[in-house]
Length: 391
Image 1 (cartoon, rainbow, N blue to C red):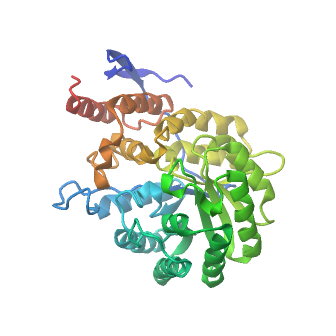
Image 2 (cartoon, rainbow, N blue to C red):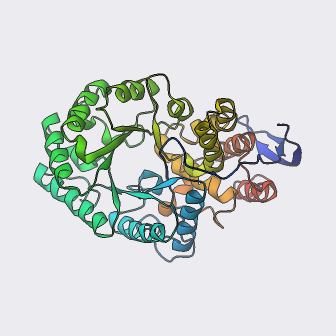
């Protein structure tokens, strides 16, 4: 479909020069008329409260109304919400106390929203950093968070633990922790294996630095506890490793792709299977991803790729190295599209990317047809450029 240019904006180039860029009309994406054939969770960001007196590097200040409104936006496009995950700046500005309050509010909101689903992250991040813990202490920490989520009626995503990565001495330590926690949960959980590219503190998870050796340990845990596991989300940004593990999963367990570089082909799948999805990029591309998943449900493969393919370069840019700063791009997209009134983040993380990054993100979002209100997006982009001395 031809998209007419409707506005011009001057954007900086890597050379330091500025050139005019023509912004086109947005694409039209349809809301889902029926269920997807893939289970799809969007890991959602939190909206900061920019007028709070809290020190942003020390304590999370959240705009609860805007944060809940964004969850309703994601639900309206057919996605489940993965709550209090790394996209919500868990461990990068959002602590456990704030996470639990967020989980309570979102679970309550989901119960009053027809068709809404939510699963929430349980970890060990209330343990002070920089210390080594016994395996029993780590088990107790996981138990505390799992019990708190179950108490408010939440479903659990069992997050990777920095404390476990720092304290474990062998793969058997990991097996002991997961065996104990999974034996106690009320309903099957999603296990989350977050790679070191997302969080350097998680390098060597499962007791092995080699990902394929770590995969063996993880699969052993899944096989032993499969009645208490719905599936696993892996975020290694390596499609071959995900496909390999997907084919080795115990029968009935889901592979939730966490690969924000290769999600389109992993979700589509191959003759031997496909991945479901639990992705941070869905926060930013919800309309396009929803349209694509609806097309896939009707086996309209060409339409699926037409909607989703242009979002892949955008996602790869948002998640580029250092990958852990991807949240900045996610929130920037929400601001450009009018879902929040400011570009301020929990922990002051709006400063984590440079102006060149934002300019390229703007171009790629436009190329994907995802600037829903171009005049607003241009006005806000000009505002950001002005703050960086570009006029």
